[in-house]
Amino acid sequence: MALHLLKLCVGAESVEDQRLSVERRLAMMTAAGQASEQFHTTRMVPKRMAELLDGGSLYWVIKGNIQARQRFLDIRPFVDVDGISRCKLVLEPVLHETSWAPRRPFQGWRYLAAEDAPPDLAASGADFDDLPADLRRELAGLGLL
Image (cartoon, rainbow, N blue to C red):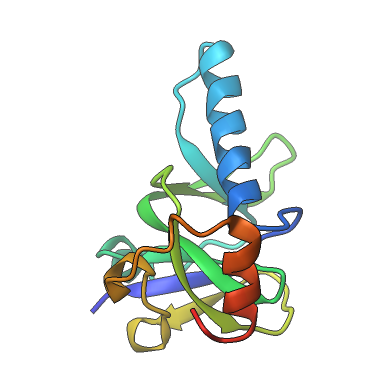
C-alpha cells in the first residue's frame, strides 16, 4: 500500500494558484535551458522513500485543508552549496484535486497513510469542472464537496 506525504502549501490561496505556480516554474526552467521538472526542495530526507515511490503522492494543505496532490516521480537527496543535506521531491506536474480535509498548521512534512488520504474529486464521479472556482471553494468549505 502506498505511503504519502502531507505538506503545507505556502503562498497559494487556491489550487488554481498552485497550478499557475507550477506552470510558471516549468516555463522559467524551459526558458533557461534547464530540464523542466516539478520538484519541491526540503531539508529532511524521508526515511521511507521506497514506500513513497511505490505510488505515493505529496498532498498539499492549502488554506487549512488538504485540497490537491501530486504523484511522486523520484526523491533525490543532495548536499547544497553550504554543505547542508537537502532533498528534491520530484513530482508529476499535474495537480489532482481532492476532497477537502481540514488540517492544522505544522512545520515540515508528515507521513500520510493511504487509508487517511482524501479521495480525488475525479474518483467521486461528479464533474465539478463546470463550477466556478469560488463556488467550488465555498461548497468544499461547507463540507459539501
